[in-house]
Length: 324
Image (cartoon, rainbow, N blue to C red; front, top):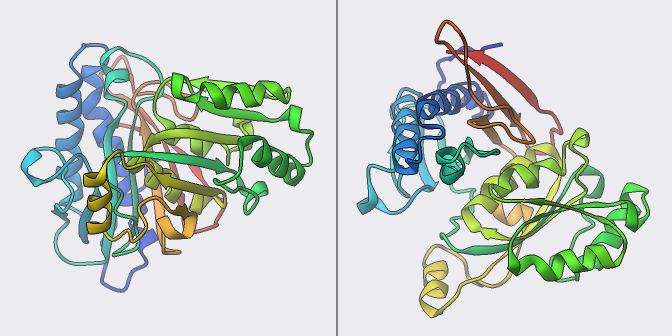
């Protein structure tokens, strides 16, 4: 299935741009395909970035990147503040990662993807590139989490919402020493831990996909990835909370300059994505728990596998295969 690009006017809902952005992530993944397993993560990132920029500049929109790969002086990467689109059409904020998991691509490891989250102008949290404490759940446990409570307390509340015993839960946690205390808590109550190495966007989304059998995602990772995950979960009807972890006074001041009055305060889902008009798209680059990676066919064409979800609390999503 291929979604055909359409022309958008000023009055069109933001969600109707989703088909065009699906093409953006598909073409980024195709551009990265030749670099899989080549040990050159920078070249892979550049290929995905340029493919995204070229395709986004064809879309009838007034777009600004609020979460990208750095500041303006770090071009040619897609930088914070960069304006994209033809200059006509909806005004939107974009959070983007052309290659989420560049090291994974360079080493041909699982779970790398091209990813974009889009919302109305001025409605996405401008998250600086720092660590964020995160917790996420799917629709059935929406409203049951509290990032200020212990993991066991959250597990107890989520288990009740899901109609499970606590020891029947599966908790997704990144395999890092900083998370040993979380892993220990899960084991102490007899529940299951599912570890992953990189790319926590996929793992947060997994809580909202029943077939993936993940009840809670928890841990500390990148704040930009947290915002992208929050958009996906808002569309899927799930829940997400975060707390930024500035490591010094300079980072705290940067948060304040970006509009965060309390840099260490709790960020609930509606604080991170302040609009009902939003969507999330991703295409697999290498195989992962959510998406299959790009595959080259005998005739040279590249097969892509993508994920699309639109509209706050829609609880709907599509998997899309396309051939380039």
